[in-house]
Structures are given as C-alpha cells and as structure tokens.
Image (cartoon, rainbow, N blue to C red):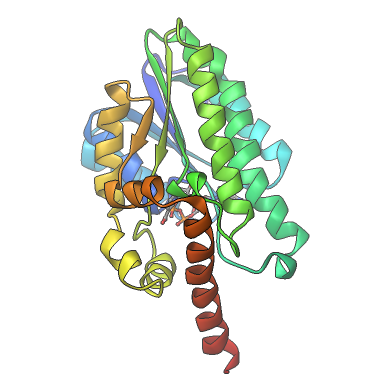
Length: 271
Ligand SMILES: NC(=O)c1ccc[n+]([C@@H]2O[C@H](COP(=O)([O-])OP(=O)(O)OC[C@H]3O[C@@H](n4cnc5c(N)ncnc54)[C@H](OP(=O)(O)O)[C@@H]3O)[C@@H](O)[C@H]2O)c1
C-alpha cells in the first residue's frame, strides 16, 4: 500500500474464526473499517472481501504467526505505516488441556507468546497511533479462567490473569488520555467444533453456560464504547467463581478438566 488512508480502522487479531471473526463483523456492521489479522492460510482474503461487499466498509488483512517475535513487529510496523487506528482488539489467544509434564516446551512457549507477549507488544507498538486519533479504544480478550487457576490447564489461566492485570494497569495509566482500555472475561464459547465438544464433555455446567461468540462480540463492543473497564459476559459462571472459595473451586475444576482429558485419551488410545 502506498498512501495512508485518511479513515480510521479497527484492528482485530485472531480474526479468521470464532470470537475474532464475530468482532470483525460486529464492527463492520457498525460501519467501522477493519484490518483483519490471522495465522497464515486461514482464508482471510475471502473473509475480508466478504466484509467489504456485505457491510460497505474498507477491509484489509495481514497474516502473521505470533509465535515468532519478528512477525509481531512486522505486523505493527505495517499497521503504523498504513493506517490510523482507533480500535485495537487483542483477541488472538490459545489454550487447551494437558498434563503439564506432557506439554512440550513449544506448547508452553506458544501460549505465553500469543496470549501474553503479543498482547503487550502489539499494544505498546500501536499506542502512539491510537493516541493520535480523537478517541481510541483497546479491548483485550482475557477469560473467566483469569480468576480461577485450574490443574491440567495451568499456563492458560495464568496467561489470562496477565491479560487482566495488564489491561487494568494500562487503563489507569491512560486515564487522562484519549485511549480507553477494557478487558473482557468470557466463559466457554462455542467458537469451533473441538471447543464445543470439549465443553460438552464437562457435563451440565459446561452445557448450561456455553455462549455464542456473536452475542459476546455484540455485547462487549457496546460495553467497550460505553467505557466499561471490565466486561463480564457470563453471570452464572462469574457468580460461581465469586461465591465458591478457591479451596473448593480449584480441586473441583481440576477434576472436571482431568475427566475431559481422560475421556479424550480413551477415545484416541482406547482404555
Ligand atoms: N472459546 C472459548 O471458550 C473461550 C473462552 C474464554 C476466552 N476465550 C478467548 O477468546 C479468544 C478467541 O478464542 P476463540 O475460541 O474464538 O479462538 P480459537 O478458535 O481457539 O482460535 C485461537 C485464536 O488465536 C489465534 N491464534 C492462535 N495461534 C496463533 C498464533 N500462533 N499467531 C497468531 N494468532 C494465533 C487464532 O487466529 P486465526 O485462526 O484467525 O489465525 C484464533 O483466533 C482467545 O483469546 C481465547 O483465549 C475463548
């Protein structure tokens, strides 16, 4: 691209599917121009073209694997050279359930790199751009898991606790600027078949509390624009984690996730 467009843009990471895709369409519906970011090979061009046609907004896309540092900086340099950014949604994030000693070094690296480092570095690198716009917003996607450590997930809830703490600290630091920072804590969402079937295996609690990504995106964008610092989308789970003391919650959740892993092992290896 040669000329920097005059218009403002919303940047969404992890935009090809699930909650990220729901954010992209929600913002386009509200007539925001969008820049979609995803891993390579996720048919992002098709989605970008469809958004342009369907919502009559500008849409661009960029493919990057955040597990490599230089890719994150490649993305932010490209964004700063080409766009005025008024909304940043740090949505890309990964998790999964595994015994900690069965996880590879790469598994641990990727969760921390995508959930923690990419969120902090992208925000840092785009902050001056966001500050140049009349009013800007950052929405970081954490999880209800940020409030509850769980065995057999270990690194994921810890990474989402970082996202919570980082967002609140930055919100306080930017209080007297034009950049507003918010953090969202979704519970389980039916974002893809694998996640939906995993959550259903968690039994009645999982089934009762499963959220639709489109509803989460719609609600959280409206809360963000109303300057809600911490966005909770699942009151049942929130109540559950607020009421139950950690010494009940932690072993209980660990047992549920262990059951889910055992079921998968049986399925794939036989028992
Ligand atoms: N699903 C849930 O139940 C749930 C609950 C609470 C919180 N969340 C959080 O909500 C966000 C979206 O979750 P989701 O379920 O919609 O996503 P998902 O289907 O699990 O996919 C993971 C997301 O992270 C991106 N991503 C993964 N590895 C990446 C890498 N190496 N480099 C760059 N991007 C990478 C993917 O982007 P592309 O595929 O577009 O490349 C994708 O959007 C995440 O932060 C997740 O932790 C999800």
